[in-house]
Amino acid sequence: MAKGKGGSKTANIPSGPKVSAGPSRSRWSGDPNRPMQRAMNQLNAWKKGKNVVLTVPNPDKTATNARYIKVNARDYWGSPFKKQQPSRKVVETEKGDE
Image 1 (spheres, one colour):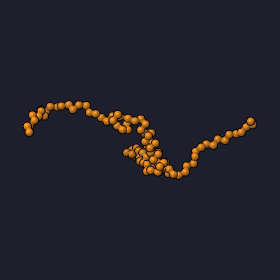
Image 2: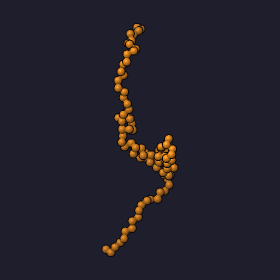
Image 3: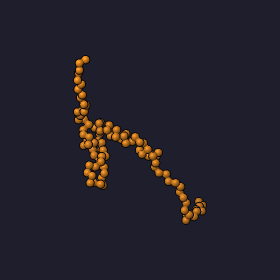
Image 4: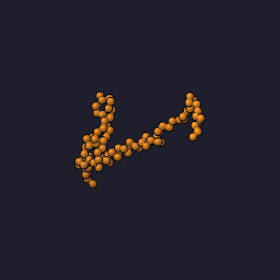
């Protein structure tokens, strides 16, 4: 095979613009409903008894290196199978003379 001529190795050749992963290319950053959908997915998984891990603000404000901590949903929300008391407000109506 013949050897190619090759070009000047000292010339600075521009490589063109770099394409970054913008909202149209990224799966989550372009969707404004993504945080709500993620919360609904976590809630539904917790109701089914799956092992869900939540990211919550750190209650210890002095730990500046860990603003958020990961907590098991059963520790944070409680058991999904425990019977919850309904929080309905019972309003008694007075019966007047009709």
